[in-house]
Length: 585
Image: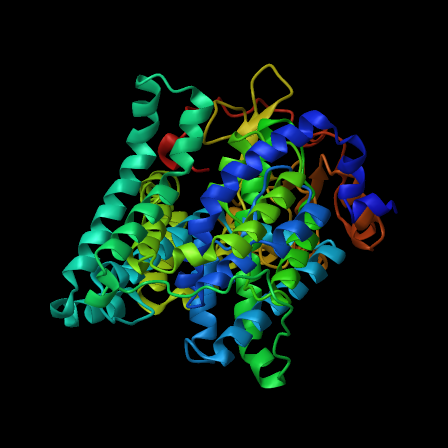
């Protein structure tokens, strides 16, 4: 096994040249400008000191550059993981205490360890058990919760709550305590940032600025909001009038820290760490795959687990908290021309310089501006169109999305994400527990067999052919058994049954027992059971058992062979009009 498989830097590092260096440096400058206010804001969302956001954006990025496989993924604090962090450690420690910070480190340690283990055992496929609609529902609900949680900073009131009803109730109860100076700053910053996203770039292009410079200026919009509001607080002494500010931020590189190893703390944070890991990995790998596809590149999901795990372990020992690949910053990194993971390392260097030289400048930065940064960022995550899309396509998916959104909003993010995992698995089991099985007949004049409800086909009353369109395993094995029994009860003239296995890739032991039961029942009734178009791997498994030797019929290479052998000599039933009333079949 090549060392480069676990250290991708050994692969792309050999091909690194001046062009890549230039492109990566430019991308790093743009992303660094974006990350400085964003990192401070997400630390605020997680309930941690603002410097924790910067610390969580330095060592983790460097470690991902060593172990990760995406050229454009930008790792660091993100909104959803920050919210999950606040929810998890808020249950075990009080915000603002040393215990709270230690719990954040422990959460990062557990999350990183879990991700690394999944990667080493090549278990990246487990993320596939989270359906996209359910994830979309959870992220939409989380975006609403995050935006709502920041309204207290915009209003300048002391409000609390982990669910939407709690937050809204607390905000209404404290509405009379609104600080109008804070409100003015928060509303102005929010409006400005929304305008920057939509209107600044077209304006700059109209006045003659080049596309690259216009793009950089647009990405630097949050920095302009930070500078303007910080100066306003300083000049007008708004801090003395009740405007909450960031205050003193340590002027230093990330410190070496030690997570808490208390067994009781680990027990309390283990499940939240697993949920954060799963959500973070799904978000990260989705972004990485999307960006890689645009340049016809590929990523290794299992190695991505190791890369993200190493990043989280780095955060645990350098004063951070759980991190993952962020959508917005990764897209910015990609658009800015990042060519290799080295762009992330250069971004980390820029943030390290900021931590050493720029932190005194944010002393008067109002928390309302950071809240505005978060609100504008997360509202782009809210996508209610998923409800319309799933309603039109699949009512089952719609029910799962709706349930996830309502549970997350009503009961909190931890229950929301847990319910999302459970709903995704339940949805999969429900769909596969009722496999699509079509009765097929021959298309006249051909050797093709199609669904009798969709096509005009020839059939025989005493020959029943069922095409099984799903692998057979313990969840759906009994369904096929009951279906055959019901078809026999509905037509007493059937003398032969053919199970067409062209779409069956797997038959587990429970399904084998069901096939044996079907064979035994048909044998007692004097009805032949036959198989057709069985795939090689399935045939190998069946040949290793007594099933084929006890089968009362034959195994046919093609369905047409079965038709010619088993169809009675008389003419088939005249092709009838297909039944379109059950389009799903």
